[in-house]
Length: 351
Image 1 (cartoon, rainbow, N blue to C red):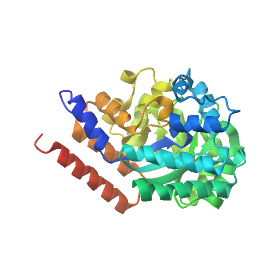
Image 2: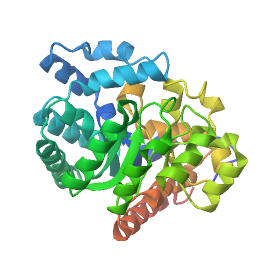
Image 3: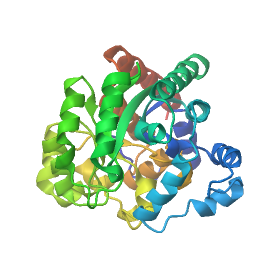
């Protein structure tokens, strides 16, 4: 990854990032609902405690700690009550991604929450697939799905999520995850469900080490067969773990602004992304729940560029990390990597 000894021109680098073709690997479905869409859904479902005023959402999305974030997140989940809501949300997320030149995204969905609220499984699958096909056709953004177990809902949610993935899994489904709080939610109990999903050909991408220590990352690797780690913030506290991640080319899905918003990390300047990169770990940059955290993927690349001292070539290398770590097919990876290289060459010619 290329770094610069002197600060890059901020305006120039921001413009470069905005036009850079990108992939995103750690971004949540409901957590990507823009204030406009959240307000529209809140107005549609007046019994919700979520504000129907987009301006009031900024205060509503100010989190005291990770537990408070989960409470707020679930209140937004409760706004998704029928297949039309699902389709609207998914399509609008793709529109926002296209504006950022995100060419490929693996969007984490929690179908258990929707099915439990009464949306028929088949209707949910048809809604997300219809939106996926429309997004690729109309925006050129390719979406793939990760079905995520909400850890706070226990083993019932794991069983339902696994059944939905294996029985009703849509064409775009590529991976199987585990989210929600880590404290009090040990990873080994989910091993049978990940075993079944992996046997069916799904990739393992659990969250781990965001609000707990390195032992949770080790458990995700050992018990859940993790191929990528969501967040992995605490991995830097264990040199042996960093060495393992680097040696086996196991990517970390790093979300800097999210970690600050949920108080997983105190300040951006204390964020461990530099230690991860210096240890040789394959780091990808992601937005997690962008509107909730007042960010987007372009902003996260700018944050990473500052923390890592990157110039345009270094930012492009970071973008190619995401392509490498993705579950895009080989031809798709080659095409997107070539597009990044062509764009970078055109932008940096004569620099």
